[in-house]
Image (cartoon, rainbow, N blue to C red; front, side):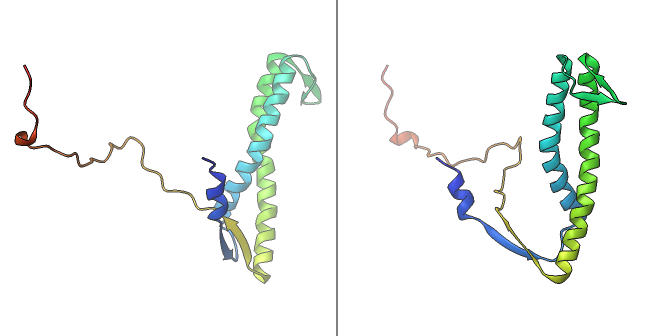
Length: 137
């Protein structure tokens, strides 16, 4: 069964004046990490095999040092970029929201059961002993 039909049929809209700073930071951080971390890891893997894709202090770093450098730089670069983008987006949304309400479309999340919970008991039909068929020896 295709789940995309349930997404398109349950689109809701909200109107708001601003977005809380923490919520906006989560959105910016998750979206920039989804782009920058795989790209930096790929550059690190290429540097591991000798490509000059990682530069540190003006020098190309290759081999294991290139891979480790890329793995260290990926979260730092993502964090700094996210901070600058977050400040810009926050100021822009606050300014826009001062004059006009912001209208957002979203798809609500489905409720999930808590993990590691025992299954709920179900009623099982019980047949009285008199109604059971006699056993054959």
